[in-house]
Amino acid sequence: MRRLALIALTVITAIALTSCAGTSAPREDIDPDAVIIDVRTPAEHATGHLEGALLLDVTGGDLQAALPDLDPEAPYLVYCRSGNRAEAAIDLMRQAGFTDLRNLGSLEDAARTTGLPVVQP
Image (cartoon, rainbow, N blue to C red):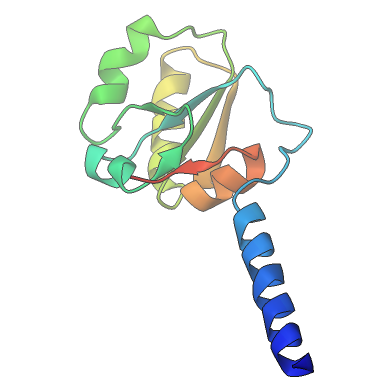
C-alpha cells in the first residue's frame, strides 16, 4: 500500500511539472509590446508556434513583401528553427531601416525567453 502511494505521488508530481514546463515567466529585458515574428515556413509554423506570432516566411519572400506595412519604430522579436533564418530576417529588416530587433533563436528558445506558450495543432 505504501509503495502504491509513493508511485501515485511520483506520477502526480511528474504531471504537475510537465504541465508547467511550457509556461515560464518572460525575462525582464523582453518588451511586452514587441511584435513576434516566426520566419519559418508555413509547414513548420503549423507544427507549433508561439502564441500570437506573426508568420512571415523569410525564404518564401513573405517577410520582404510585408516590410512596407510594418512599423520600423516598433520592437521585433524574431525566431525560426535554429536562429539562422531569424538572423537573415533581421539583416533584411535592418537594411530596410528597422532598428529594434532581437533574434530569439529557435522556437524552444523563444518560448523560454518570452514565457509565451507554444501553440500545438
